[in-house]
Image (tube, rainbow, N blue to C red):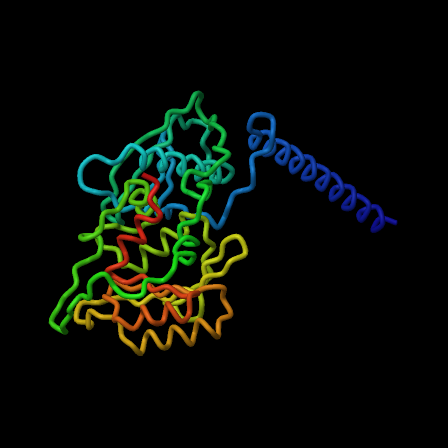
Length: 313
């Protein structure tokens, strides 16, 4: 009988414990829902696939919640639009971290940005009351999907060129400069690329195209080969192969690479194919685009046109 009494006491204690845990979870869920309310309606779930700046550090120091992003900054003053974007992203980070770190005494969110080892303070967001975070924006800042056209669609809808406006003579001794030194990159795209950790001054053509596609709402699915991925949007899949130029490489796209890309695209079963390279294109790509209008080659002489088609300015 004494054993049964002991078991009864244990069961009672467990029941009380479970009741307390259940009450705490219920209150926490209710609090989270209240916090997510925006203008009387629940804010949308976080879009985990959207491009976001990479967080390299988060600390609470006294009255400051400090968030550091891996975002390459241009020389001089930081663009106020980029600062606003990073402040919005930092606020989201603090929202995510507040349940694991104490922020009751925090009066401001402070943003640092820059490459690892050299971040600088770029802005701060004062709080109305200590520990009280403002609501998150309903529409994420780092997304350009609300525009009424898709520039990548337009490029495939245009008739392929029958011949280049001017053939570029290349030799093995040519060394190509970083594309960022030659291209005019609109402000909106420059900010969007930097916020993804892509430095427009030193980026490759492959990094630029991938970053732009993500900005415009394309979901990137990597393949087994790191140079290959599928970009998907609105049910349309684009097979993308990246051909990276490195100093010492021949500055013209290799015919073998072109043939491999064509075979891979046909085997992939994608709706369309894109080969991206900072190298110059040989004449053969114009014939290929005529024969297979589902493929496009974004090579060095076409990069500026590609950027301009996505320009919002």
